[in-house]
Amino acid sequence: MIVKNIEKKEDNTVSFQVSCDAAEFEKAINSAYLKAKKNIYIPGFRKGKAPRAIIEGMYGSEVFYQDAMDELAPEAFDQGVKEGELKVVGAPAITDVNVTEEKGVEYTFSAEVYPAITLGQYKGLEAERPVREITEQDIDDELETARKRNARKVSADDREAKMGDIANIDFDGYLNGERFDGGKSEGYDLTLGSNSFVPGFEDQIVGMKVGEEKDINITFPQEYTPELAGKDVVFKVKLNSLSFEELPELDDEFAGDNGFDTLDEYKADIRANIEKRFSEQADSAFRSEVVKKAIDNMTVTVPNSMIASKVEDILRNYAANFGMTDRNMPLDKLQEMLGVDENMMKLNIRPAAEYQVKNDLLLDAVVEAEKLEASAEEIDAFVEKMAEGFGATAEQLKAYFGEETLAEEVKKDKAGKLIVDSAIAVAPAAEEKAEEKPAAKKKAAKKAAPKTEDGEEKPKRTRKKAEPKAEEENKAE
Image (cartoon, rainbow, N blue to C red; front, side, top):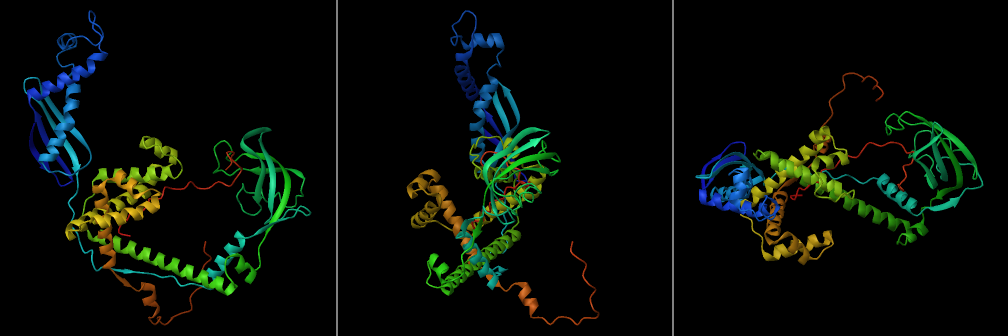
């Protein structure tokens, strides 16, 4: 095979030609014949036994050309990549093919390649590290959550239902006198006032007594499913039981139930945990801002194929969170099942994918610029940490990912730490402005203007479909 006319273009694409001589083409034609003949029946011959010359005589001398060209193409492309020392991303395209039995076949390939990267400043960057101050309300909120977690359910069967109660109900929905799908359930616990059902449903249970049956008339919202949107329906409801949650008192006994001798000790532990959480959030915000600045300082044109591949990763990972693990599902079908329209792709998914690709390119460039390496000990430590999160052994992960891939990940991890560790934390701008003396007021300000589940679908309030969140893969963070 002869590789020629390698042309690298500014848009991260490359084109080149590869010629396969007549002998190489003949070998591929014969290989195509041997693979195809078992399925070919020619009168006078047993199936699969017809000579190549007979088949070509009946169907034309070019009958096996396409299969032969398809067989040669991958090898020809690989030869071009090797001789051109190209780092290809995405699938190649065959833009032209010239073939004759006497001369062989000549392919013209086109492909996107790894982009040229010019690093800007990535060390010694300044970024804010905004640490949120703890308030008594933060501690009170944690205590309230703990109280609800330790709440005791108390029967209220001897009185009428009121907001805040837990009503155990049976319900059966009717549209125009006929039951509709998903409108029936038995023994369902509904917290009155939770607004988890269709508007108006919970309000009409208030005042009911245990054992009472009642018809509840409601109108489904226009945003509901097409079959029920805007329709008037009747739910036949029976109240089976009534209860409410009794919260424990905030005292030393409550603290004891949570592993502390006194309430003050419990509050101190809550404060320490909140401080740790706020500090970690500040660290995360700092890392994100540092990485963003390093990316903004970098000059690169990201190939479309790299973005498309990352988009697919985001969607498939999102789908996996919902138990959709078929990695072979076509992407358009996956988008349809996830409810991801083109507007969401344009405004949310694609920008996030491009940012993640830029993050990877940044780390690759820093690895090269700093000549970072990965020792066997560093790889082992990295894999051990990974194993904790994956629920697998280090040996299993090494076998799955391979030594080379793991070494690259370790080097990227080191590049990310280098960027962040060299960065300088500065005070948030808001704090700096707070120290400045406010300007004298000229006039009194005008008064501000008011500022504007169990397999059966329950008649719940409709919610906006969740968008796939782009999982941030900023290894620098």
